[in-house]
Image (cartoon, rainbow, N blue to C red; front, side, top):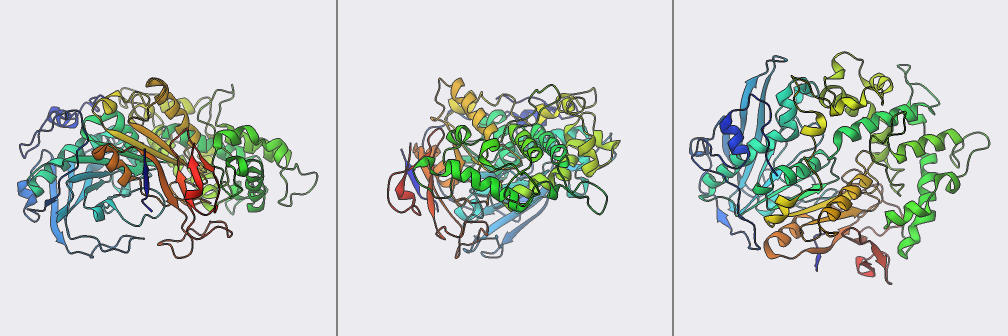
Length: 582
């Protein structure tokens, strides 16, 4: 793991935000500690300088910052923090916990604040890492900093970064009803990052005696969305941004999941104990195995090797047709075929959610080798009627539809793609920004501010992601290329991960380090021409139980920057050295 081949503007949010907070969020104001943060000058390659922690338990007073309360600052011994999958001891560090902007909502009467924790290693590499978390946020998870992929062997904290994580402005007890409060919506969407960034840099400066030389931002899923938003809104504050499986059109994707519930309900064969359609019966495991095997039969060898990996999704789109590649059942369903109705439903889902007029609501999805895995089924048949209904009902619809409608699958089945879906674009006098405003990058294909200051962006996306489509990310990158004369690779590179489900797993080489090449690109000017990814078979730090049995336990592959794909050039199909990006 970790081998490398080298070759916006800030808008004011909710009206109640204090002017000082807005100034700091835009990079032009200072906190209570007297440290001003202004847009940095264009970055040029230069490596961060290491440093040593100078303060910890006294940081509450030394790092005072506007509207910020530090609840604790304690020293953590080396090895005291355990990180799943990481065998090396976590370094000795300072743990600072606190919250910003505590308030009582005038809408729902609840108390809100932006909770956070920051871990500052004694032996510092001179860098700051903003850890963006997933889902609906709501919990301050350990600030360790993911380097990308499934179950990494190390973390940003282990590498010496000072790392922050947050709950994005609401607590777990408020999920998902925090969406009733207008400010909590904005904090979740982008304002928590705006508020925390200058505070965290001030904390770093007081802890080490100087500000960070380089600042990085990373996350997967909703964390990837946070990263894409940061690339557009906060380019002046970050030198390198890592976005994994980014749901940067998350409101659309969530509506698409409800569309999927409606489609799958058409072909269920049984009800749950509650008398509702049992989506798990829409497609059995055997039936999805048949579809995945048909995809491999048509697309596996397009890269020159029959290795269980569809390396070229674009060519597969031309080669695979569900109607002809999978047998149509003439009688009872036995797992070896699909009924005509099932084919219609599956193609509707993979073609992308649409309203009754046929207008697209969200992107298409690629047929890929990982669509018969557990993670895919979890998102399609379970999360879609719980997580997505809650998100759409309370956070993404304006006004919140969840306050007056049933929850769960009933909400999904009753959701109108014609009448209700447009609510993600709606705003009111109370909810001044729509979900498609506060959740997405203001102009995803205009990253000129990031480009012009020399910052770098790496995006990766599993092609078997069931909730956020890699087709959507591919389309975004094509638009970014077009906006930059046909080539955005000088500052932004997109790495599809064949077979990988949502942020990991699936029949994929899903273990990789994206942070190290990002740092090398930012600080040494070495753009990543490929990144080596490894399968997590027997003996791995965390075994991926969904790997095909005929794969080597430590199979490797090069991940290639789009539009290049890995092509077989000869040798063992278990080794990345047998493939080249072209």
